[in-house]
Length: 273
Image 1 (cartoon, rainbow, N blue to C red):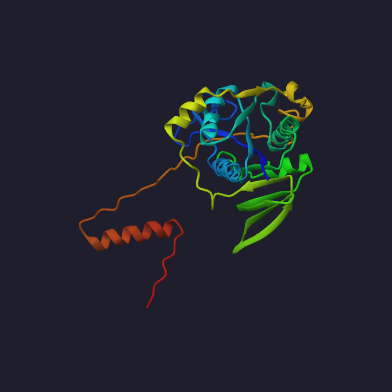
Image 2: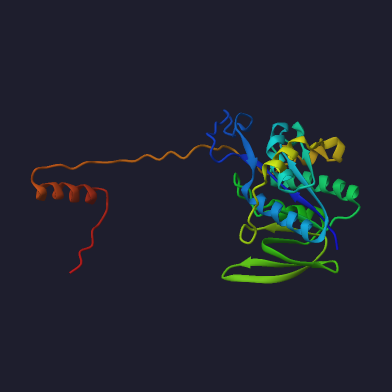
C-alpha cells in the first residue's frame, strides 16, 4: 500500500557557527548559516525508507525565513520529493503553539493537494530550543493520534501503523490508526549521506513558498499576537575560572596554605583512618 508522508523540518543555526545576539536578546539568524535540524534527519530517513519500501510521496515542510531555502535542499537530496517553505513576516515571534498551528494549516493544504495523507513525521525536538512540543501539538490541531519517541516504524497495513516506542527501561509496540503524527527518535534510523549527483539534482529543484494568506492562516493566532509564551532573553554561557597557585620552598607550609584556603571556602576534608 503506497503511503503519503509529510515531514516537518526546522532549519536551525549551524552548531559550529559563532552566534550573535540582537539587542533584544534573540539570536540574529540572518547572519549565520542555517542547517537541517539534526533530529529531523531521522524523520526524513524514516519517510524515505517508507517510500522506497511501499511507494507513495514524501513532502517536506518548514516554517522559516526565506534565506533558509538552501538548507532545505539537503532533504531533497536525501529523497524528499517536494518541499514547501512557509515564510511570512507575520509568523515572526511565534512560539511552539503558534508554530504548530501554522504548520497544521499548511499540512491541511498539502493533504488536500495529495488527496490522501497517511503519516506526519518529525524529529523528537529541535537542537536550538529542545521543547519537543511540535509533533504532539500538530497532532492536537489536526485531531490525529500522536506518538512521541518512536524508535522505528515496524509496519503500515490495513489503515494502521505499528511502531516501536521508547520508554524508560525498554520499549513498547503500539498499533496506531492512520493518519497519525510520529516523532522519530534517533535510535534506529541512520540518516544517509546523499551522493554528489543527488546534491546537484536537488539544487535544480523548485522549493514552493507559501505565505499566511495562501494557507488561510488566522493571523491572530501566529506571531507575537498568537503566542502565549515568548523568549525573553538568550545569552552565552560565561565560564569564569578562578585559579590560585600556591608556592613555597617548604612543601609542608605550602600544603598548610592550601588547606587553609579551602577551609575558608567552606570545604571540609574527611580523614580516613
